[in-house]
Length: 254
Image (cartoon, rainbow, N blue to C red):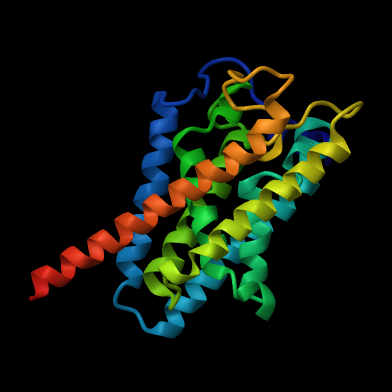
């Protein structure tokens, strides 16, 4: 059984290769975004209870897929890849979004978790550089597990803002900043604990910049601040677009 599952899940070599913006990546994106668009169209005219159930099922599937991966990784890669511990923004937001649907304290930050998760996951669906590094077949477990997970997380973020009673509010944007700062501190903790004999980890890019432009000697002192500024800036841009669209719609109604 072990040999069968290992052969089934291991990285496939030879033939086609998955690459960012290659034909197979474009097919995956078409399936992901097309599926999300179809789901939104189907849910649009459904009742509130159906929409809330869909949101709960979506984040439940993402969390379940994330947890299942830890059991399948030893079969696929011969080890548990600690890179997938919840110190990256996508995996951390998966856990926090799941908790925000089941815990009153975390529910206070549901909009902030959903927004940060939406931004990070949609970026990774569009540019899954971490998958492309392995130069493996497009139908390898590593490829479809990663894209499926990030696709479901993208769907969850969109569902929350389209169908749930969760709204973006300028007066609460300080919560977005708190979440991003907390994420940076959490990632710093992970990098401090695990960097060394276990390898080099750069969770949330708080150790090195993704393009390795900033000198290594000063990067750890600069990147935590740059990451917080960059992500908060992107979120504020989303806020501006969101309220800009709402204002235009109001003018059309008038």
